[in-house]
Image (cartoon, rainbow, N blue to C red; front, side, top):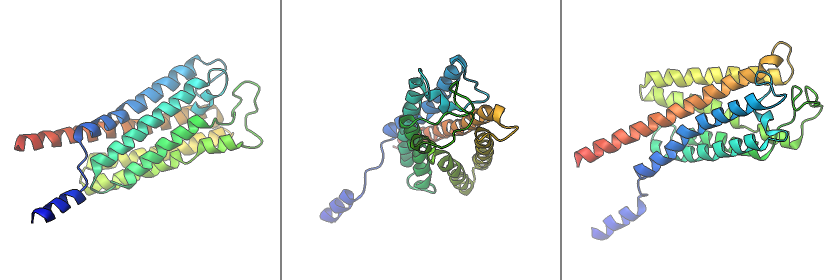
Length: 238
C-alpha cells in the first residue's frame, strides 16, 4: 500500500504555486497599460507622425524607432508570462488549453512585431508613398497572426464564462470580440488606402488595441482576485 501511494504521488504533477501564478498574472495587469501609455506618448511627440492617420507600428520606423521596438518586445514578454499564468490559473477546466495558447500566440506576435519592422504606409515616414508597391518580408512577418489569434481568444473565453454562468463576463468577452474585429477591419481598410477611412485609420487601430488590451488587463485582475480568494478559503479550512 505504501509503495502504491508513493508511486501515485510521484506520478501526480505538483499543483501550481498560487504565489508564482499571481506574479505571472500581474504581468498581464502591467503589459497593456504600459504598452498603450508608451505609444501614446511616442506618437504625440514624433515629428511628422499623425496618430489619427498612422499605425502604431510605424512608430518603429525612423530615428527614434527603437522606442516602439522595445515597447513591442517588453509587452510581448509580459504577455507571454501572463499566458503561462492563465494556463496555471485555469487548469483544469474549459478553455484551459486554447485560452492561454491563443493569448500566447498574441504575445509571440508582439515579439515578432518588435523583431521585424512594418513597411511605411500613409506617407510616414515623410517622403514615403501612401501604400507600398510591394510588401517586404519584414513587413509580412510583422503583421503575423497576433490579431486573429486574439479575436478567437475572446470567443473561447466567452464560451468558458457562459458555461460557468458568468453572464457579465460572457457578454463582455463577446462584445469585445465583435468590437475588436470591427475595428481591425476598419483600420486595415484605412491602411490599405480605402477612401473615407485613410485619415482615421490610426484612430480605429488605437481604439481596437485599447479595447483588446483592456480586456486582457481585466481578465488578469479577475483571475488574480479569484486565485487569491480561493487560496484564502483553502487557508481558512485548515
